[in-house]
Picture 1 (cartoon, rainbow, N blue to C red):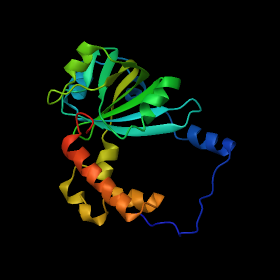
Picture 2 (cartoon, helix red, strand yellow; picture 1 turned 180 degrees about the vertical axis):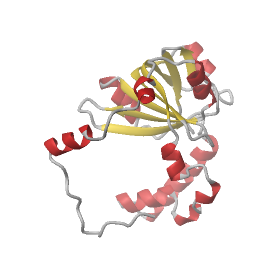
Picture 3 (cartoon, one colour; picture 1 turned 90 degrees about the vertical axis):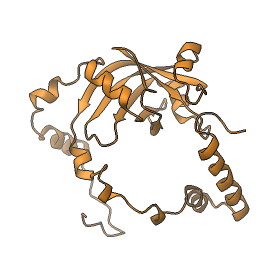
Picture 4 (cartoon, rainbow, N blue to C red; picture 1 turned 180 degrees about the horizontal axis):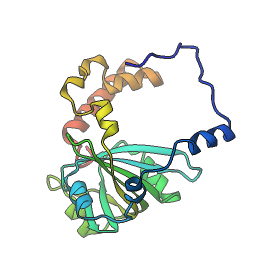
Length: 221
């Protein structure tokens, strides 16, 4: 494991000129990497996306402040409608709606699709809009429950990404897994962060347990 910085240490930062010189000094992009963005979903990426159960979704607000959120569904739930169009469901969550609110003011979106056990990923960037098309939502139903809305992405960039990050992190290696008990529950951690009293924590733990049990595909009553 790399050595940690001293608790009080703050890294020295480059000014704009030095940062630009650093980036320009990295060397030339490889010929394959330079060509890999084909701007559309081909047969390989279509199969990858349709087999993927997980996607990281990046959006930004009107001021460019970034947000990345995980999206997970059974394989086949991420839809490739054609070589320039992808759609995925907006499932029940905490109703912060960070992604949806961002898309109202800034339609740019980035997607990173993953398949467990596979170190390669598929990256898609484009422009997104919201849809409540009944046929589309019906095609995304899980356990008979369609989503309330879907995000439809017009593909602008699309390419496969190399496995180095997953190889370095050993993300899928069972030996690299931690014991979940190393961390307390999510509600406990959030409670510490925002100062929840014990009755509020207990109620939140109960709501959370019901949401995980009964609310994966539709909002809990």
